[in-house]
Amino acid sequence: CANRAPLVVAPEVIEASPSARGLTHWQAEGKAGVTFLNSSITATFSWQRQGNNFDASAAGPLNQGYTTLSGRNGRLTIDNGWIGHHESNQPDILTEAITGVPLPVDLLNAWLSGWPENPLTTIRTLAGEQGVRQFTEQGWQVRVLSEQVQDGYRVPLRLLLTQGRNRILLVIQRWRLTAAS
Amino acid sequence: APAPPTAKPPIAIKVATPEQARQAAYTPAQEQAASAALAARLAAMKTLSTSFTQTTQSRGAPDKVLTGTLQARKPGQFRWEVKQPFSQLIVADGTSVFIYDPDLQQLLVRPLGEAWGETPALLFTGDASQLAEQFRVRDSQRGAMTTYHLTPRAKDSLFTELNLSFKGDLPHAMTLLDAGNQRTEVAFFKPQRNITLRDEQFSFTPPAGTDIIRE
Image (cartoon, rainbow over all chains, first blue to last red; front, side, top):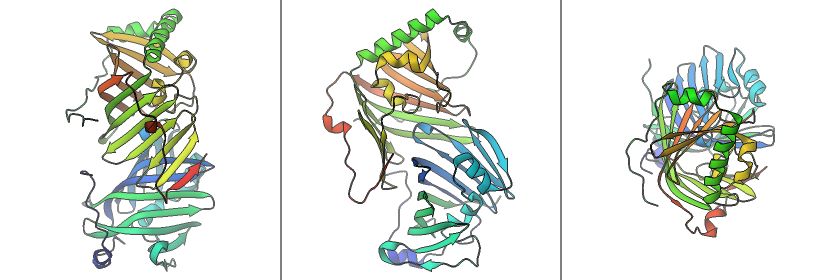
């Protein structure tokens, strides 16, 4: 549709494009399908990386449950009309306390670009229907199911995060570099 | 359905008016009358078909504008389809709600609860006599526009206030406010009331390969 950035999925073009790994200033927007505690939601999300910091938001249909997250020097702040304002220096403990899901949101700066946060993390290359690559960090398996080229860089199109029975499927619809502030 | 005009939807300015002062001193009898008046309007609307523009205002973020269509039919059936800038489909067949996302290739199926607080579209298809159980209702008039101000009785509702405006007998706009002061305004374009709607509108079969999650 008119507003969505052109999707380049030709394999050879993806292969030839530079990876987004290590890029420190970009913005992604897309969809999230989250399954946890026998409940499921679909939401739209936006994520903006600024160095090691980030600003993010997510909301369900009719903007219900609109939530903002911001990471500043390892400190996570969550704001939601229903549960209010919360902060912590231990992001996964805070997200678990609020949602029941111990999601290390501070690692999403790396995962959303399709790569592990720790350079020493083992990466398994996948093939065909399985996807592109897979790795595990802090108990979460991260699988890049497919990639695309946006703003000249190779970024994930579909990303599956699983941990026990918790499952987060992310589809990145728009991705662009942003200026370092 | 015709594509809605691109004009920016009407945005209400929050200024304390004498009208709002009158609202504060609402008596139970007035609330009951407002609830009954809204229930009568909703009961008289067997079906609804309309385009909509949904505008969301959030602190420090640009407005988010979606467009789509809504068909609703009593009892408990509706089709809420977002078309731009992305696709999303919510269908209620009277028993279950099907939330289908083509980008995620995922379908959520959950029982159609009675909680209108979670699914505002149910206002147009739910049992209007239950309105007073779920909301405190006040009304206000401005020219040809009647607005009903609904405050959910449930403490865990996803919004703190829902305003539903009618121009004559036709729904004109629906505004939702949540506890974080996020404001979502749904403006209805060319609404049609009590027209015949096809059964297929209110059932949904996902494409092959869709992840189906049942709750």
